[in-house]
Length: 358
Image 1 (cartoon, rainbow, N blue to C red):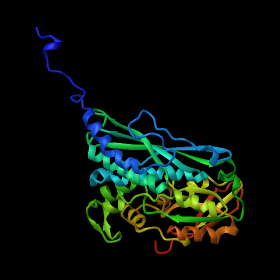
Image 2: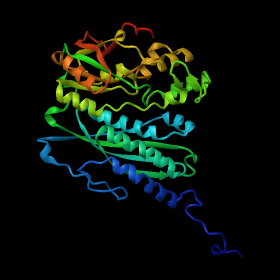
Image 3: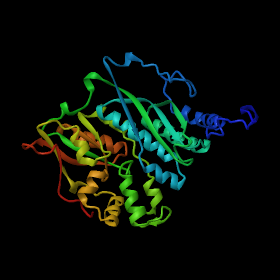
Image 4: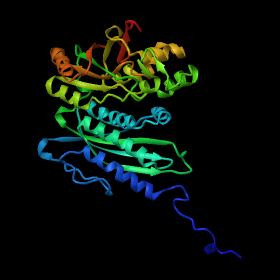
């Protein structure tokens, strides 16, 4: 009779979780995480909790803001291309640019990486990108978690999310209550698809059009994979600089749902943002998706950012100042529309006209 003690020994590694690989991944990511810090950080990577000393003397009545987000199915492109650092930049952008909408300065971010199997080099690439994004946003990478899920996720699969925390003075919180008739809507150019609408983009370009990721695309001037992995623009520092120099009423981060739906979230009842398509030409990637997939314009506009990644609503007196600030910071920006008194039962944001050459 064979007893339990006579059989082969079972280990955590045999069940699919490698503690050694996890430890190696932590060591590889530490140098990158250290680059994304602030003077208020009191702890290093590897502790049970991140410590951040909030210097309350900087604010009279501080309000804490928090945001959580992920990257979505853009990860599928990164996996196919075996390029992972840009996903880290996308993750930071999706979180901190939501924070800054209310005027909050991003203070720190914590990430969560779920993997089928820990590959230290892949984790390092992801965290390298996250750290670079935090540096761009001016926030600290305060820690995070890498979780191995054998049996639940395929070995090559992973997903990422993060939570960011920021702070804003109570009397400087931006939002719909500040918006007035006659205010001007300024658009800030996106760097491409950003991190939304990839299920539709992949369906059209990879499944319907059967375009190879490594194939050169004339309209893009680079490969399809390079176009799809273009990192999301991080606007946090630009928006904070703009709010410090001009009378900004509110911002709107243009993510899932498109320009109209996201801008409507920051327009109060009784008012409407009237936008002119003729003020900009969407990047070629949107036209290619529309043409290859026979996707109607309305569907494109409610799925993608269409070339507008962030919107600012400013007082009419500060339009020139606002555009000058953004130009000096190398952010392409233009007057997109204006705020008007809404007609009864009309939407809070509308697009009119046609895009030139689209």
